Length: 296
Length: 276
Image (cartoon, rainbow over all chains, first blue to last red; front, side, top):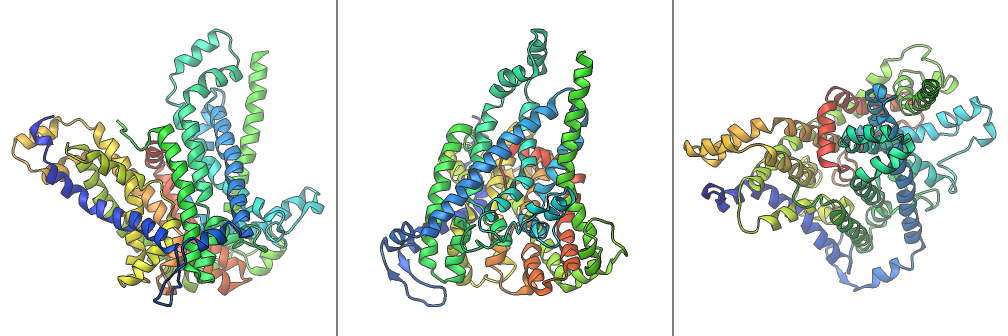
């Protein structure tokens, strides 16, 4: 490299403001969170009492913790099927040459929900699910299935599915867009050659499209699973973990422990668990997608 | 025969996707239209157009607090975006145009910020902000938003800067321009497309953010729209028209921005491939 490219001090000055912010606002709190999880403390008293691993032991005996883990996992599985699986199929169909003419319209429409705030979408769907005035029961009545009409968010058996469904409504179009971008990088010649050889569309999909978008599938899957463990807004807005504690996720459990029950130490313990889960998933993503490394 | 088969395929897919589009668009239209209904109209005629178009709902929602929340959201979003663009482009320049010891470690530190769940930082940040007296001010949101958006912005801008040819910059340096001039007069103008994408995605994330806005602000006069809407829900209870109008007011700016600047949005997510 040329001499002019070796001016480390200048480079450092350019990076410094961003670096300081990231170190103090993004990284320092993670260390503090771990430290906090070993103490009993609350927000209005100054003192902290060291309790060691007490809260971790308590967490693993807390049935709500397992409900939350189960709900986060359910979120992950359903999102993988709908957003990654569904998004990929929709993208493949939109790329078909018989449909491509209409692609700009559909892709725009499908993407729209993902630009709206999750909180706004949650409040909106809460009204849509409303047993008296909502659209869902309205549709069911209109098609003559009024016996299916239901208080979707008010029943602990259906509430978590109703919440998860909203995320699918909101983000399947986002994944579709990512898959479209990946598929548009595949050279057309591959498909033309396959067609000449007499391959069917399904065959082309499995033998050309799938191998070419493998990386996108992996990265998309990991992003989706990480997202499922970061869920907070929609649950907070639509059910706040209820009815009972049936829709509690790790995020709402943390919030409730910290800001309703004022058990900051216990809440920090949950924070540590979220950190460990997302860290493991992120390491997998870095390994698979190289997104943390040189992108040139 | 194949022509017929193709036709049938096309029709089935178009019908299916149109149904999908309806499922996606109808709730949003329902939201905007119901915001124009009186409460009784809303209860009795869920499906029809408003009997009388009650534009007052939008005004009532605006006066009930949305106006104030809207201003707060605009202010916080603008300041955060400008700061992210400035610090982000500086860091991206530093990381793409220099060779120095520790560069890779810096890069890894900054980019790992992409992965972290904000929940983990929630309680420590809450205490930190209280400790430095920023809790319950605009700064309590702007500073965390900037810090959490920076890794993604740097990631996007850095990979774009790496693809810009360097001849012009090298010539400028030989002519005696210093690094700051090169950054400001050459790299920033050349990087305009990615800066635009970054601005849009950052604005969207900040405008829509909920959890920090819920915890770091106590005063209702400082709330941003997403949290403000929660207040409105508890205040207005069963006055659904006004609530829906409030929701529509907060969702529309992003939908409009997306439809106008679709190209920039797509460039951003395709370069980043990361949610939020």
